[in-house]
Length: 152
Ligand SMILES: CC(C)(COP(=O)(O)OP(=O)(O)OC[C@H]1O[C@@H](n2cnc3c(N)ncnc32)[C@H](O)[C@@H]1OP(=O)(O)O)[C@@H](O)C(=O)NCCC(=O)NCCS
Image (cartoon, rainbow, N blue to C red; front, side, top):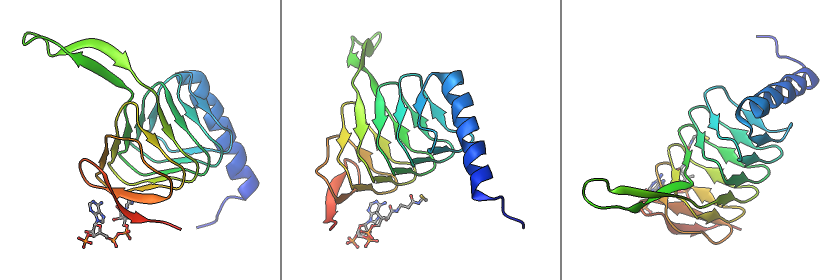
């Protein structure tokens, strides 16, 4: 299959990010690459050279740094509720921002919960649920996610 020249790819990517930014109100850097089927809410920020794969959901109030890779099915959640009474457990709505540091890789299907800062240089393993902020340069896996490896 003939490959498209890189400048054309970059131009198409920039145009498509512009359309997405206008449509959803998210701030998507022109050099980021957002695949079709990703949902990025108004108020989210996606940094330079970051890759957002299909079926990713990113809530309002999320800031994703540069050179981040976000695998299919990742959910970054900033919205929550106070626990309400039995007749409606999802009580008063709350929103707590999330940040994903530069260089991180979020593995397929992981979930980042409200208020979490994933520090730069981290890998979040596939399927993990990150409930607390991480320290830089580590691999985090499991539910709740634990640091399983230090990275240089
Ligand atoms: C985290 C990951 C990168 C592997 O990291 P690693 O440090 O090389 O890990 P290893 O394969 O050496 O495994 C180390 C331990 O972590 C465990 N582990 C690996 N991945 C895990 C996961 N997703 N969840 C829970 N535990 C996991 C392994 O079972 C192993 O446990 P053990 O020491 O008890 O045997 C990889 O498992 C992963 O999740 N990759 C994501 C793939 C993906 O999302 N691809 C989409 C394309 S972008």
